[in-house]
Length: 390
Image (tube, rainbow, N blue to C red; front, side):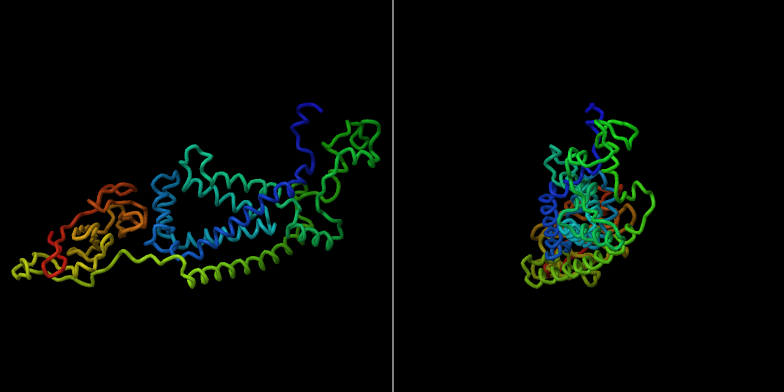
């Protein structure tokens, strides 16, 4: 065989892929089903106050990811995005494990893995230490070969469609080329009469190329293709309903068991404010002059509370440590969205474009905002109330 022919994949050379990749198929299927169920069963995954939440993960990813602009815009849709990822992982796992629409499930897994690579593990060094890129390439064989006709629903669908079309079993089987030569009537010595006397070999062999041709070769669908789509869609519909039911049951059981403790909100709210003159006095000193926000206890240690500034803008006051209070105008200088405190990241974050501001001084450290937040001065009075003094 010449070197050029040695590089040519013979017809149906992928036939053994189904058995060769069966262990990988089981691993990917079980792993993605587990990943999806784990997210759905964990209430904290959808709780912005938890360091394990999808919101905290997006905030962290936006700092270094090469697609940070996209992630910044997705931050405001964190919960729907997290739900889509969890259900997507569950659907991909079911499809790969059952061998149902395996190529589509493999494509979905590859896209999701590559997206996570760009968002999370792009800067892993060396590059092979990031698992997302490995998962991407692990899914590619199933995009190319599907389940390979091995222990799969796709095989059952193909056999059913072939039977209804009056064709034989389309399941591929690998045989040696010497076996084909032993029964082929086109072989004369070392040449093939069906190929005008060309050397007999796997390339262009009429036996190997016989039978039902793929839609790639035919360019247009036939009855077999249409039956495959109809039967496959019906089975996929049933599997989809079962997957959604499994997702709902998993989420319900996870919350009922309460194994993941619910993260407490780190943000309170002052109901109103009152202007004071400073003439009165408390038990240990004068009442600060300014606008009374409310009880200092409204602001949890390591948390925040919202209020309305004298100009009418939303504001946020924080207590990074006991007795230390910091306040800022909560309007992001970039596009006017209202920032909020992320306890998981210990940052003030804009939900619209993911600008990030420090708690200590309100300076901008990431995002499109051109400047930091406008600071206010707050003081705790002897009466236990907080006052906005400037």
